Each structure stands twice: as C-alpha cells, then as structure tokens.
Image (cartoon, rainbow, N blue to C red; front, side, top):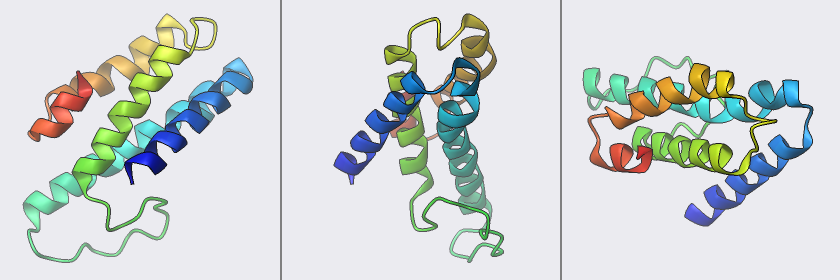
Length: 121
C-alpha cells in the first residue's frame, strides 16, 4: 500500500511539473487538499458515530470508503511535502504556499492523531 502511495505521489509531482502553471492548483494541489478534507470528515464522523455506518453520501467520493482517516491524512501530508519540495517557485508561488499549504499543514500538525502530526512535520 505504501509503494502504491509513493508511486502515486511521484506521478502527481510529475504532473504538476508538466501542466500549465495556472493549472497546478486545480490539477495537482487539489488532490492532497481533497484527501485532507475527506480524512478530517472521516475522523470527525468516526468520533461522533463510533461503530455506526455513515449516512451513505459517498457517491461523489473518489477515495476508498474503507481507507482509515489516518491513512488519508498521512498520505495528504506526504504529498504536500513532495509537491512543496520538488516544485520550483515558478510553479508554486509564495502566494499559493501561503494560501493553501500553510493552513493545511498547520491543521495537520494539530491533529489529535500522533502519526498524522508526525507526518505533517
């Protein structure tokens, strides 16, 4: 599973290096941001509905419903790190980093799960 995530991360970074600069946010950066949103949603629903099935609104969801929230958040954190490490400033502007990366990484760093916090830093 980790090998698949690593290969996917490398592919997303390669995609971000090849698409038009104005498309980096919508095509590449949107993926980890959606993973964070879904992971936080699952973590919240797991805390409020322990042992109960979710309300079935996953028809638009592209993530596996069996993937734990922790795994989604760690994967998103690693992907954000890869994107910020490998994309040059011409592709990842300071404005984009301030607007999307910083708040997301700060939220992950404050997650109650230790593994998620460790992945965020």
